[in-house]
Image (cartoon, rainbow, N blue to C red; front, side, top):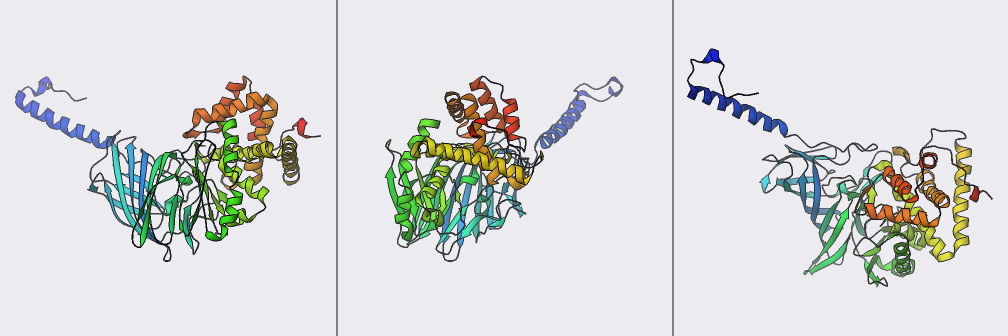
Amino acid sequence: MLSNQAPRRHSRLSHPALTLIGLIFFAYFAGTGILLAQSPGDVGVDDPYFPNLGNGGYDVLHYTIDARFDVEANTLQATTLIDAQAAQALSRLNLDFQRIDIGSVRVDEGEASFEQRNGELTITPAAAISEGQVFRVEVRYGGSPSSYPFQQTIADLGWYDLESHLVGMGEPAGSSTWYPVNEHPSDKATYTFRLTAPKPYMAVASGVLVERIVGADETTYVWEMRQPMASYLTLVAVGEFVEISDETADGLPIRSYAPPHLVRRAETAFARTSEIIAAYEALFGDYPFEAVGGLVVDGGFGFALETQSMPIYDGMIIRAPINLSEQFIAHELAHQWFGNSVSPATWRDIWLNEGFATYASWLWVEQSAGLSVFGNLARNSYVELRNSRRLARPGDARGPVTGDPGVEAIFDGEVIYTRGAVTLHALRLKVGDDAFFEIVRTYYDRFKFGNASTGDFIAVAEEVSGADLSDFFEGWLFEADVPLIPELES
């Protein structure tokens, strides 16, 4: 504690001198205190599976990505503006960013020093950032993006050079291959994409197309995502695409895109989009975004991804028999509610994405093909799940579990997708249809445009049903053996 009164033994010093000494000490320690209060933002947000993903100390509000593409060379020249608010006083901050050359970094109009290493961009602003301050980071960069191996999940993530088109996407961490980002689903933000492509190429992104600026040799496409979006749900694609336009009965725009040689197949595959949206709105609540659609690319990667408002589908899915392609589309559209609007709090909560989307696609079967077909689908999935568990790990209570599968199993078809869906069906059978769908609607309404954990869903289920469901969820989500569902045994 500093005092402005001198001890008696120093009474020979004059009061002005004491005052001066006191001010010097006060200024020194106060200044030191201010410096100590400032600290770097954390590298990573301690996600239980991917602790280095994301960064601490700030909350991103909005990204503006201005990029010019050369499709043949697989290059971009870009400027990304990141508007954020500091959650603490920051002496420096980090962004996730992979292997593209950086020209300059600025923070609030001032040049900032930076270091790029191991997928992290560390930025030291010229002046410290105060807690609560809204600030802007500008990163100018260019080069050839590329995908990269990401731990034990999908082999390569992020950026795909598909010869006739370029695609940026990737779960759980592909966006950092083409723009600097706080790459964790807990930090959602709105987006502006200003994408310039040479003719005859088109640039497609998440959100709604709000402007098209046509030049002599190139066109700029401005896309806006005005609802919060997790970074792994961002999409950009540049290629020769044809737009397929439609709308729902309520006037929601449906804008899909496909290469010219796949347009007819895409039109057939997407024909029931409006019906699927209407069915889900009746079950879950209003569709959360301003547009819906799909992007088809001939990539050969063999999967679909629920990129926000415009899921992306490999061409082989669109070429599949209509009942199969329709199931893929129903699954990815369901993600717009569960995964995109309500995003996982951590990657341990991934079953809330995939289990819900899988079960929703079954509900579409119930709506479109009838209760009998749905019943067979649910029963067969349950029986296969029990048989698989018995044969693969009989009596093993330590295998991957749905509520905490481990890094290696976060996209496991049996553990996450099928068992997640069967868990929801078991809950429906336990509490009844009225309570079940009220649980789902309440859960969605409470956490839309935000994040939720498994604990959040369990709390809603118990609140709405009025039942103690702890043993139920313990058995289905946190034990390896598959609980018995008597209704599905016959």
